[in-house]
Image 1 (spheres, one colour):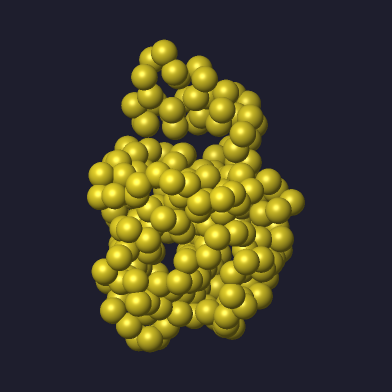
Image 2 (cartoon, rainbow, N blue to C red):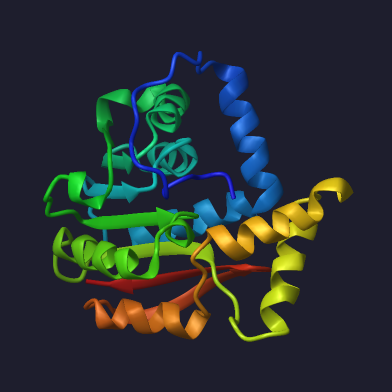
Length: 232
């Protein structure tokens, strides 16, 4: 996957984040995530069911800026706080969302860096599979604490059965969909198996409920990636 939430924040890079960089990042995400534009549209629609016209949205894992741009394009009255541990990715997000800069505040760090809110909704796309299980539980608790009662949380990340042989088969499918070069296939499989924290869909849903979210509903299933909406 293209986002990186597992590494601690570091100093800003000297890399020039221009239009070409933003386009390259977007192309990579679209190659790895089935129906990425549709996922963003569904996220926008689900939030809008409960978020008011001038709502405030928390975006965890905002590096790259793709969902920030999609949501800001759709909802001219919303404001956003985007959180990501990568200064480089935040600079890319800043470039991609420049036309909405007055409504977007970007913060380098993890969930504990996020403003306390309260927020009218939250989004966490393609991020939680980088977060170790124990930290994921705390992350969801802190997301819940920052939301108004009844506010929606939209999540999407890698989630598939963790028993064999199903686990290995799903990893192979993920690598295959990304059109990984044959010489890199085994390395990619090993990286997913060893570096990502992937839960089964049942465990993902259970953790949402255990951290206080209700009405947990699957709204998206794109090969290895699942998306849920739930409410604080």
